[in-house]
Length: 569
Image (cartoon, rainbow, N blue to C red; front, side, top):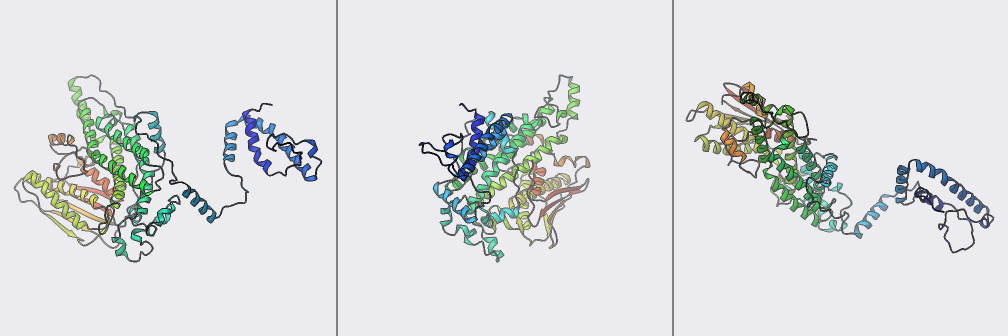
């Protein structure tokens, strides 16, 4: 008799039940009891009472086959898949629960039998970025949630305080090299000495392995979210520079998937992964300027009448072509178009830059942990960041830029808590303070005139034992900002700089986030980016201005560093 696939699936599903039955005695025929699922011969039914009971059970099972086959034929996919899943698991008693020692010994045995617990990566690098396979990969990773981290979490991880949470998939041989399992420099259990803990910033191989494992999981997800966002942003997605950034992100996304196994479980894999991230970190160095160039291209396209921002409503990157109109009407349309008020485009840029800061913090922290230790530093985080020292350095840089432009620079007076320190990323604070100080210096010089007696710029550092924030205020007497422009100062590409300087800046491919070599007033993204840096670890940046007098800027930085990243979706 020929059995249908459904009947065969039914029989395989019930085969496990047959194992539990006492076998009826039968004449030796040289055939296993599994050769045919048919009922045993009648000669075996009279052997014993247990054999009779077994034969009855066989008949019940055989009679149930037809009934189950009919039910499975009505919904074959769900039941067959469930049946196959059941077959793939070993037969166990319902009351059996493996003990911890049994689980550990099983894991150790499987780990020792193979050099790596993860399959080799699949090479996706040769696939076109627009191919369905790549699009499916991006969509698959973008559907996964991102994992946010706080400044304190990054510091504790770098010190090895979370090594006890490492996966058992790490090879046992890794724990045999020195005191790697003991955390930073072999001392994690003894954390009573805070000063020693602050200075113990050298990451052990196991710490690097742990951080690399997290980044291998997290970075493709974050890159995939941004790739999709770059594809969907209205109007801006059509700009050549933005398309280049999207290609760059896709290249980095595929490179991680193609060169690194899903689970980094050996030190060689960790070193190879670090080399990959070094290339990605350098490759993304110019993204800030590239995106600013894309915004500049969009504004130029709108003013030239190539695009209408009226469709800036969340469409999939489609803009409207401006119909043929008279020159006067075209000029009126251009005057009505204000790039600074395109809300969805700016919401996208806020998401993009916050995400970019997060990606660079994670990669930068990991790569810094691989470098020789620096006192009071854990990666890129300084446990004793001095706002006073950072402000002094920013004053020197801003004064250099102002003197180069105007031949002179206003004096800056620092008051308040000059001795306080707190954990923070010094480069972030320097970026914020440099932006605020150079704006204040430029406004002061231009408002009072060159060679005038400039009023000093005042910086106040406020902190108290009960304060939740470290607050830095920058006050100038540079004439203030008109109230109508207060909203626009947070807009990307809004600037009062000379348009020729602005056009020259977008042609300058700067591979660093900020530099004293750039003009004093340039692309106009300084203030919104500074606010993104402040908000990244739970702070903020606000500005109050009095037109005709001056401007006060307030920088809020969390003291404890326990606020998680505001990850955009």
